[in-house]
Image (cartoon, rainbow, N blue to C red; front, top):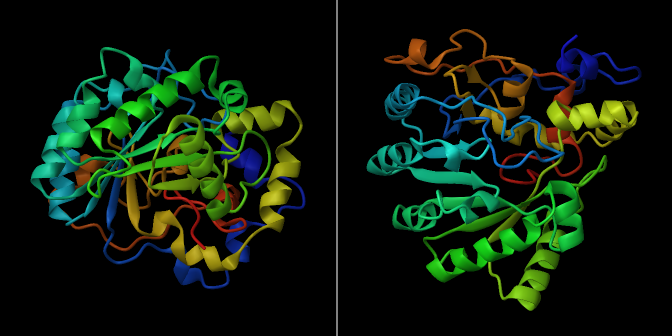
Length: 326
């Protein structure tokens, strides 16, 4: 049984689709703004909350050929935002090509980083490369204290993350208007994140006071009960309770702003998904579901593949790759 079925068939959890009164909101918008590329599951870390289940032993990486196909479709469909994620996207040897191609199209470019990978001499030059191409960096920092961060990501991660944030500040990130540095907070357990504005203030005060670090915004993202986090919930007998918490916190006002309504998500192998979470569950898009078959065509409005895991994006203030939605 797939992870998706385990979440969808839990007792006392009403089907997500039944909670959405306006069924038109379960379709994408007419013109999408964002193409999100997961360019590999290889990562230098193996974080407990990672729904992608990325890690040092993963070998999946997007090829240069697939990247070229993605950029062709990007241009043909007039996307305005390229959101690059992983794994650790820095570990894909073709990352620079991808960024250079997107920059030529004048698009906004975002790279999601775990920070620590940039401490490796093999990837350290990417910081200046990102700055020269005005790449927005979205980086994960589980908490502003050493104990909480290292407990979630491993011993020494906090210190390495702080060092990289200082270097990014030196380059102008988080300080200059055209060098945006955003942080990401994920809860360390089976609970919802606190209000985003409040925890952002805490991060800014603590990081500035302790280290002199500046950043633009903080995104509070709810952990999705799939992948490695889903396995953790099952093992600790918390899956039912966590799903009940998400379901009880369902906010109908967040559905219209779900990220899947305004993006296409593409896996390392070129398969098409509505979001990064659906990639983990292998829920491909309806109709055309491979980037090769989309070349030369326009993306049409489509029905989104949803399930009870979507409660994670619609609980409380909502959750997306860009933080809360309501």
